[in-house]
Length: 450
Image 1 (cartoon, rainbow, N blue to C red):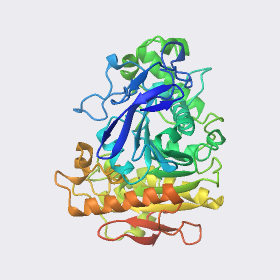
Image 2 (cartoon, rainbow, N blue to C red; image 1 turned 45 degrees about the horizontal axis):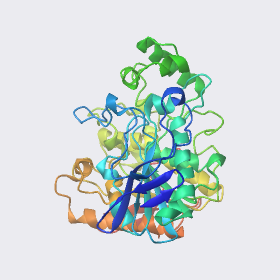
Image 3 (cartoon, rainbow, N blue to C red; image 1 turned 135 degrees about the vertical axis):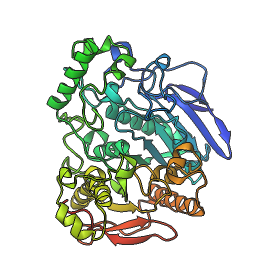
Image 4 (tube, helix red, strand yellow; image 1 turned 180 degrees about the horizontal axis):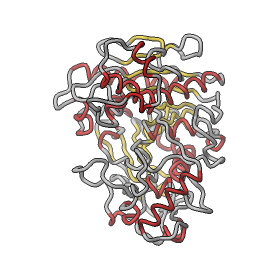
């Protein structure tokens, strides 16, 4: 049992790790609080059982045929978090706070590949955070603060500062880490004065591009409101049940996701490579070598010129590759790798301690695809999510590489040094994660015209 400011929680212990699930860090965003910034949670009397994940934020299944993560009966009480600790009696363990990805429209901590037990067993307190996605978290409404999903994350980091010591963690050694939309969240928080003092280190795994100004976001709201038969106002959308909004979320026909951080001039002043890095934050940035293979289908006869990159330069840098292979490289650069390197360049250029990596190990199904790194970091290589990348029977390399990456992440959280040379603007060295051996390389080839 652990006492928090809002009440006592009772978790459970398995294999030497104590877990506490479904702890509210903010009030349910419903009624007058819907589409509003997170409000303080209400306290409770007695002891709250914290043995089950809380509800996910409203969302559709991430892929056709998969079971829903959220159902209408689940409601909106989604602003909860989970804690795994290897030693409740300890003091000063490093803390790692996870922010999931999902194109700003999917994601939930209940997904088995985000289980924090194995990572916590390495000697850290792990916290995973549910936050609002889709229109609930990132839709633009007049007179309402933008980026509510990001504001949820800030509220969770504030909870960590207040409460994590009771779980054995050190609030002065907090590392926030995330992948894809979660990585963009991490990078944005590392630029924002709103998060000053809330974390010391950051790990951003595959930072995507995709930011909207208020006018663009407002036009998406207008189209969705028209499709739903509602007014494009807070009152109009607050009258709609979440499932009615989900039914029209693609009405705008926006490629990828209709949602993303809105440049509001407050929490988000621009992409992380222009928003003004805070050099006091230690930052690891990285990407997978073939990001696009986990994002979309590879065309057999792609129009390379449609990507808007220097096709001739890519052909020169990658002789002998087919157009489909070049498409993967170019699309990976455009969507994720270039934004990630730009973020590293900006942070290192501002004097921040920076490290860069390339996850190059290729799985048997999708190669070194977007998202393959997640089960390696969490040690959840036996999940259904992991099987999508690793196949039904992962090779012995998987366990070895997972252990090495986990060790590097935990070492960084504990000491500020992941174990390979820092990235700077002269040599641009980065770690190549592969099996059986890792090595260093210069981050130049394949990132033409950054």
